[in-house]
Length: 243
Length: 279
Ligand SMILES: Nc1ncnc2c1ncn2[C@@H]1O[C@H](COP(=O)(O)OP(=O)(O)OP(=O)(O)O)[C@@H](O)[C@H]1O
Ligand SMILES: [Mg+2]
Image (tube, each protein chain N blue to C red):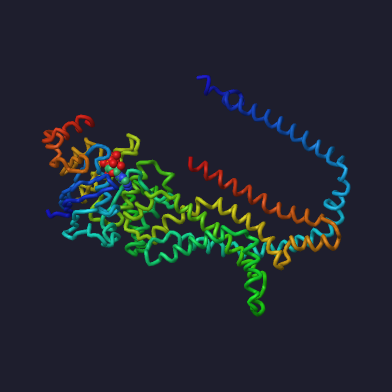
């Protein structure tokens, strides 16, 4: 195993509000890291910093040993290597599911539609959406939309996937089908960072759990430790509230 | 239980009640409309000047004689509209995109876009038509480049493109940032994000508003008559002078309405459909 992603001293502020106050985090190749923490603790901001949707103020982010947080660096090639899935799906409503998925490989990797037909169909079928490729987002359930969003990110063959509370907007009975997708990705060894409120799921699948508190990683460790015997009183207090 | 009970006709109690209410409302509306129309038909002819007005504005004979000629002149309006509309759409889009560029090197474009929309939205249409339509041919251009059709059309294009640009820009602004974020997270560059993600949605959102602009354009084509082109309004004026009668103007008005009312209705329908889709 080698370090895929290494954050050191990452800082991000919005005006006077410092949201990331020096974050250190190492993610190994093939690891699944879960970020937990109260609302407003900075989970989303941290993920958005990692794929450069937000410019980082200070600190370094090494992807395969190369600093991607360097000011002035072209963010597009980096983003093409990192997949992100959002809480609100953010599918493009004017495109069918298949078009949503094919857009970026076509435009960024220059692949043709006919080239993509087979692998994209395979992805849809893998996640039981083979019969939904021609549907528009508003013709799909929330769970189906979120799975299409995951397929859309996967079609770029990313090296890392970031998931920002991807089940929070779903009806409870649809959460399972999306979590199954994550289990399947974990089984094939995808490197993943997941901000989540699904504590049971984090406990089940995470290699490492990080507890974010007011812009800092207050405590990190294997799920047994974090959920079973947290070192910090704040962690214990947070867990007692959500478990 | 009683709420979902159905009557013999298959309607729920509520649906039956609402159907009765609708019928009643329709009867009342029809009755009151008939009363107003009847009053107009009976009372207006009693006005002292009615006969004179009728003779000079609603003269059947003049109408029959001039209407075909008016229709023919209206073809000119349609031609002018037909070549202006696509150019306005293209120029409006270009100006809107100019105003959205972020790169510092392209700042002049941004400035140009802002000045352009300010200037052309700040002037009366007729003034632009005069300035462009008389000014440019006044430079002594050879035929056919001195044609008022060209320069009058250009004036309309310049003015309407400014409005269309603003409408498109508001459409671009209305697309939620999360759409751009999703596109960026996939590695799409700004140009592709605009072209494939933002613009298609923006243009769809503002289609009804733009349609209203094009209805206004259809009417404003008549302003070109002031610099020469013989379109329907000018033709009606010619007939008026020939026959010393205003009926041709009424004929022209009817022709305009025959086009603009269905178009306006259609735009309203689109707008309502969109509002329903959003809620
Ligand atoms: N674009 C922004 N501009 C200004 N402030 C922001 C912005 N994005 C986030 N913030 C602020 O940063 C803080 C952390 O927000 P963030 O969304 O990262 O938290 P979170 O841990 O993801 O919370 P949640 O569990 O509710 O999603 C909040 O106080 C928020 O108001
Ligand atoms: Mg969040």
